[in-house]
Image 1: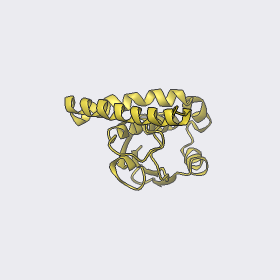
Image 2 (image 1 turned 180 degrees about the vertical axis):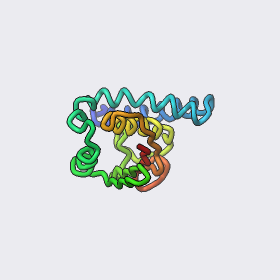
Image 3 (image 1 turned 90 degrees about the vertical axis):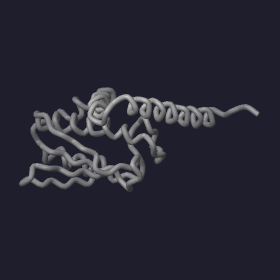
Length: 154
């Protein structure tokens, strides 16, 4: 019996997930958390550039309110902006991990990929408000939580 293309794709996704999990576990054995966070935040540039985010976000440059409206209406995110504390809490509001390396799987074990997601969020919000911000994943499907939630300090 021959494998179908769909079966091969499924096997390749499993292989990719396993390969990535082994790589990340090996890296985490060699680095402390801050080094790993810095390394993987930097990797977010690949996804950011691949999606052409500079062009997509250009219309929101210097307009945080409109950008938040976009995230809520187009991406379905739940966004809370505490202006007094200068903090935004973003809930991706999805039942699966949105990381393209995880292929919408709810498989856990790739928790360090969340550092890349922190970097992606930092890149987006930094671009929009035109200054460096800090993002931290506070809840993650990869960590066994219901949703991926970020705390963004402006």
